[in-house]
Length: 165
Image (cartoon, rainbow, N blue to C red):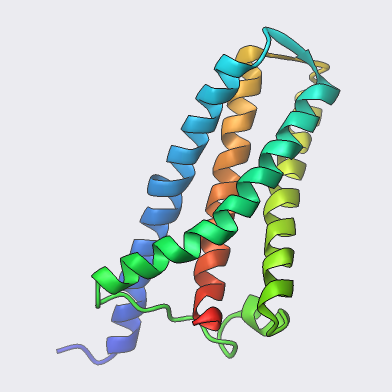
């Protein structure tokens, strides 16, 4: 017998969330996009063209994932009755800070999923003082960028899913 069934349910959900975010979505998406970038890019590209390509990738990926993940998450939650999203406006800062309008929230989530990974990638490139991107560097940075975008989109989709139901 457990004294705190809600905490146990929350632990099961968070275990599911971390596995889905990092292994099933982030890692898979990062590897696929890194391989695509490797085979579709030139041997050397200048920094400007690479960052434009990264921004375009993030825009497309974020729009697709913010609209796709809620559908996939709902299916997984229906299959496993043990899982329930523990987030409410009372216990999660993001839910409390965002408006109740679904369209405005989705636009904000898409912008977050575009800007944060792009800024992270730009920061990594600036820290490494790279002026030209090789094919391998481009694939590595794109893989990290897309993995972060995927993880972020999945987390935000889970947090805001209950609000949309």
